[in-house]
Image (tube, rainbow, N blue to C red; front, side, top):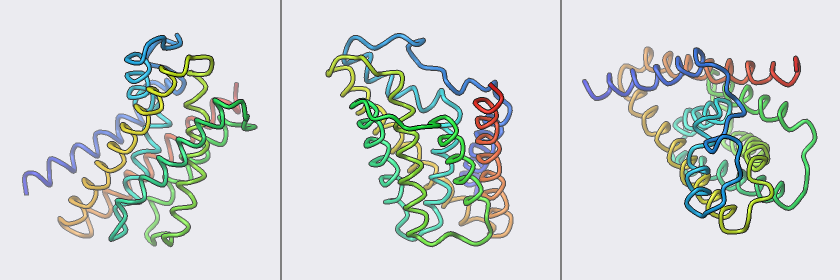
Length: 210
């Protein structure tokens, strides 16, 4: 029981942090400088999805939704695969119009889906992750464009590892919470979904007002 309560507090604090933190949606671990070594590229890939609140919120939402399905732990890898594809497309020079708006809308959609009483069908959830992952991957590639092959590849590896770890970790934590007191636990998880959606709305306001 103490472990479940501790897990609940951790997840709640994470969402509260998303809502209260300064909106540093476009920050980058290397301060905007292109990584010049494999190590820098890898560390940059690990850090970027955690520093960008919109990206981090999306990963929490992915984990919350994945936890609702018996075999949902495969769903974060749909996100990761689409994210890698989006990064590759941008690196290849294929642009995505209104990228910032699409990234924010994906966060809102995932958050609202996680806040719903009724779970989306598995296919619809996978499609949502594929579209969201593609847009987020495209945005995450912006800060690496122009880097050499080594740092670029290491950056992508870092992105894949950290996003798979965060989304899967959230899914496991959400399952543990849901296994506690069913009604109260599901209310907490729905609250987390609303927190994700609110973070997406905050990110959406930046390009629209800018």
